[in-house]
Length: 201
Image (cartoon, rainbow, N blue to C red; front, side, top):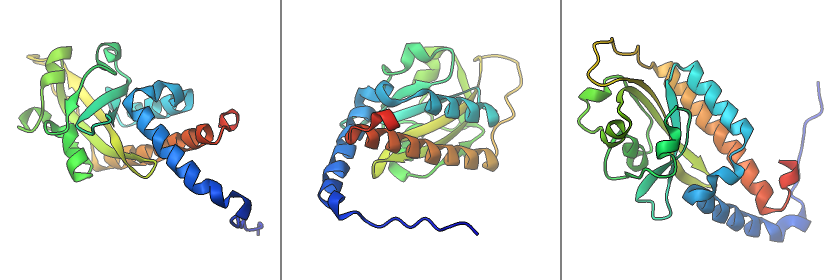
């Protein structure tokens, strides 16, 4: 049987803990409000791309709350239209299915999005697409809710093609696990930046 890892608090670092915690939260706010690209590295991107593909999503998005916490801003998307709305589109937290996650802090799995009256079709219309199925789950890091991760299945509007197969509860569980892993990667990166050890991140 291997040796147990026991880590005792180091009194020499005691006075640094509150400073590091404060700095971590400051960086989390900066990251959510536009500096996401500075620390969102290739490992995080690969994790999301792999998981979105594994659950059968056509694309997925990381939405982060802005400084006012009144809007969700898409900061990363895996689809072909990402450049046209990532960092630019603003989704009010008072409208749409994605924003329900902010108010309830509960995940959703919806396979008949077009029939759901709570859907905000603004982004679909902007991109010329129809969202058929959606998964969404809260994203927490640095001690609080910072945004939402969503995954969608899409088709062209007014098409006669059949709808995509939709998502299952197992797909939602996978997305929730992905959100947890991503949060830990983000926190590690932010903490490394906060204490000047980014070369070890």
